[in-house]
Length: 424
Ligand SMILES: Cc1ncc(COP(=O)(O)O)c(C=O)c1O
Image (cartoon, rainbow, N blue to C red):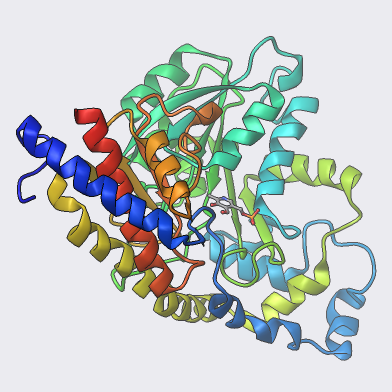
């Protein structure tokens, strides 16, 4: 079929649907078992960091900070604070280097605010009748899960090529004092891959908020995860907030989960002096200190920020062909039908696929019948509900290139199938 589906005649579409159904039946018969759900590094990426397992000696751990095999050092070892301060684009005194998960730091920052007033807050969030967060969508499902677990109202905000729709954000935060935060994945957003523009960052820092204790949760999980040579710049939120006199607004997070070992890396938080001392106080109730041995391993293994960048170029060499496999399959197998658009990520871990409204759930089901597991439809929206039922996140890093090609055949045919049914 040469014409695009929306402008094809009804009988042409019926013939095409019969063809696509037959392809689907054949795919089901093949009985594939492929998984494109979560953004996990592949074994080859993990192997790049195997040196972490052997790069420190007994003498190293004895000498660092008077013996890091023992308790202490709530905000991390000085060497790690220097490295991850550089990583976050701030000074070593402006960071806390934590345990293995930045998501845990974000979760705990919200729970702390729930229990005790954050700097500038009139009351602990848990004492207030309603708390709401702005959720640029499609976004990261685990951010939304934190809000949902605490009963925080989630307000979806559209996200475009430059970040969230700032007119919408400014209007909402100016009016409602129960809106206490916004989730942001600023460079290589999960899942759309967009990078926040300077103007967006400036507006987030300068906007008037009805809540004096409003926070920007700046989850820079993919800060150095570039796929192209031409790196897109990102304005430093903490610096922008300092300039605007809103330094306490910025809570920046990052981790090495997608740099070294996922779930066995190092996390980091950067913020204002007031927020850091608040956070350290809360943390020291929870723990006697982070895993400093793992922090030292990371410092020894990477050396400095250039070491991290060099390492990430090796990651890109491994995953770029996989991203290319997704893009080229989409272009050759689906684009002409004019029923879906695919993001063009320049970094990060995901593709975002938008199809005809009302088809995402059906596509996920059809792909599952043919043995391809996709992220549940709706997962990229608050409460797991995509109001248009049209967005699907694709995670291409874990499967091999050949598997991706097979999975994309199934996905593209499933999109055709579901869209033809809907157009009919
Ligand atoms: C946007 C984003 N933030 C945080 C995480 C998890 O980070 P960590 O492993 O440091 O908890 C992920 C993992 O997929 C992510 O995509």
